Length: 157
Image 1: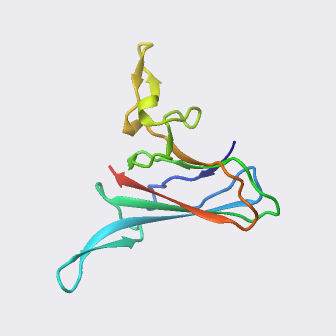
Image 2: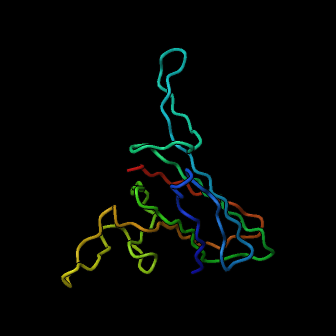
């Protein structure tokens, strides 16, 4: 299975979204990041709007949108779209297709399937703060010209 990594958040200068596709020349990835804000309209009703992530604070809801497309001349089979998860970001784990890693991408599974070594030589269950990467597998062949989109949510801790 081929993996394509998208850089996670760069907390120094806000949020950067500069994706890079690795290994497969036909696949192109683009990422957008938004902050979901609740505003009040002129009639006093709450409205959800997507804003630029210029300023983020603990508790803010982040929305990641990953657009992928096969710009090559041949179908691409069995690739995965992978995102690094920066410290301070808690992914929404409700998507059953989302695979998680707590060791930099060496092992994948759902959170209840992942374990980490302890300092005393034992192991412990992974917790959401341990997540280092998220990924989605695209199992079907992607013909030339086909595109798709993945969306995932996270909370700023």
